[in-house]
Length: 391
Ligand SMILES: [Zn+2]
Image (cartoon, rainbow, N blue to C red):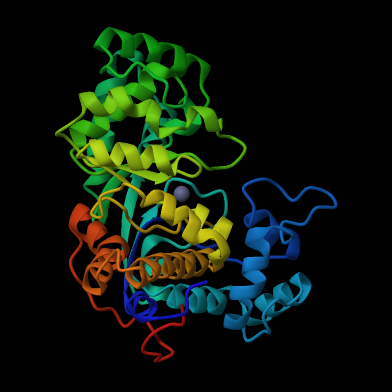
């Protein structure tokens, strides 16, 4: 590990924009409930999610924020978490994340979660909303619509959803529903009507390839940045179909339209880096992988993401869901990983220090500010009064 230097200080002092995350659970959690939230798999009998890279990272890097020794056993960690109560736990981790803004995906909530405003308030940051388009489509179907009217009613509902105050982007989970090996063309009206007829008769979640294509093209028409889940996710995703390189033909057709933000990407961060290098509208992050690899390996993932990516094209996200530990752990892993790799390049004279600081600031904050049109802000983000955080 590179010794701490000016890049660690610069990244420790930088207010981040976490451009993709979810809410934190608004309830105290038993050990088993907490374990189920720190894995993309499940808490299988005899195999605790604590015995994994993310589990040891929680015990190492989150325990001190609950006034516990590093590497504390899981049972002690959960006992202290419950004693403090979820409000105080959320406040501590969200403040420690040091974000000036969170862009919150509100479309996935199997648990009771903080709203974007509640998340932001606990962190002393700004909260923005990202509208998940599959949820809009499914709400349209649930309210009742006929197949002939589906396309127009969905488009109107999406337009209404993005007019809500605080909405800065839309998101699709097409990777989960069909994968990206789709016909890239905008579907014809008759195709959409026929597909809608099948889906509305069958019910269930939106997973028809024609309707998913229509959803992606509706995102283009809406004109807002589009976040796309790619790569790593839970067992519901078929990883080989979530490779962002499968979007190549669609990206050709949509060149010159909306910004497309490839989320997570791992293990396809190199494919995503290629796309961000050759398509003006493509950006990427390595959220989710940051806390699942932890500070011990975040540098390696970021290094691959940055091998060829233009520096205005990489963003920071935590993709934290459920436990506020992940809003903190994502930020810590990002700051530390990026500081280590940039400091090493400065030490090797591959990069000047001012250039390295500029890259850190773009990646952690300014690329997201520019893309989402977020105002610069200096929130009172550190209630403990510490001027910077340790990276
Ligand atoms: Zn997410």
